[in-house]
Image (cartoon, rainbow, N blue to C red):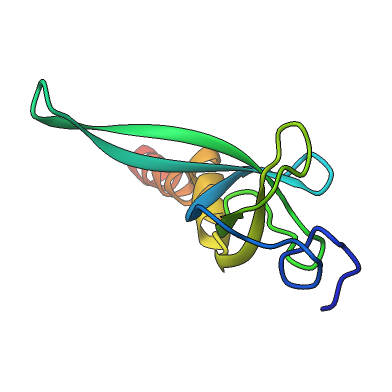
Length: 126
């Protein structure tokens, strides 16, 4: 799908240079913007241990890519696009449809277990 967005890395005139990384879309609510979160493991030499650090980056989300929440995306560094944005979404590495389904399943109580418990109680009562 061709887009007319001049800030798109593929169809526009933006050059990608510098940092390129993979992260997860935490939020895609702002218009043409995605908040990308990535987790980096850093070594702490004093304690000879590792710790996980999360960083958030605002990236331009072109309409031809249209990344949504929980998608895994590749992001590239560009010139400053606005006050907070200096990255652009290059491509979607993986969609997390199954991740969303798992979260919804955890939130809802399982009906089958309820039905089986009620059926056992009825049988015991008879």
